[in-house]
Image 1 (cartoon, each protein chain N blue to C red):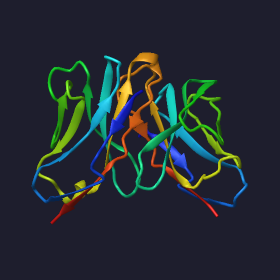
Image 2: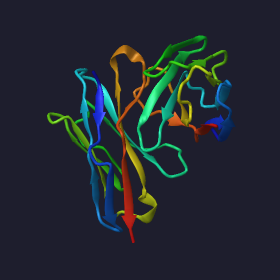
Image 3: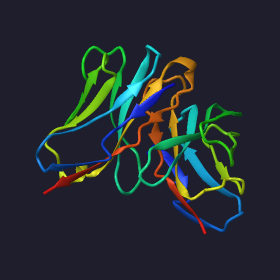
Image 4: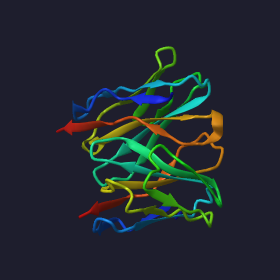
Length: 116
Length: 113
């Protein structure tokens, strides 16, 4: 069975500091993609970053980077230089490529609060 | 601008009434999805459709129905058989057979009184 686990219900970080949000996943499929989404209080889901299972390097997008450790089945999100606008809920998700359903499986989310 | 439009944003209904949530996309995506989100929780898949006139049940399809008569539209009906319909509903789309991300609408918040 495929599963995403986010063990941190809530996190605090001081403005301008870096923070790591944890995500572990479980799948027996060799081909998959890992995603991080941000959900502000308004509710929309904002795509942040993607890592493919065969990608050799960790993905980076501006202040976001994904610490991909395939052997440990972890895909932690690192946000550098936190800003007040980063306060939101963050979801890790996985898309398994076999079966071709295209559906994303989500974790429970981590609420991040950035303190001024 | 291309995107996904969900309506209404807020909806109040009495218990026992069917409710239909609209989802329209102009991204020319083949695949569309409906997710449900409960407070403080992750998203759970209700239904998905990879092509017009075809759709499959997700993990929590009981009490819901969908149709896909047009590529652009994927409405969700919350029926009276859904025991706990109060939730936040998100529609998404993606290019069929893509390994890329899902694009989401802004969501519809349904409250059953």
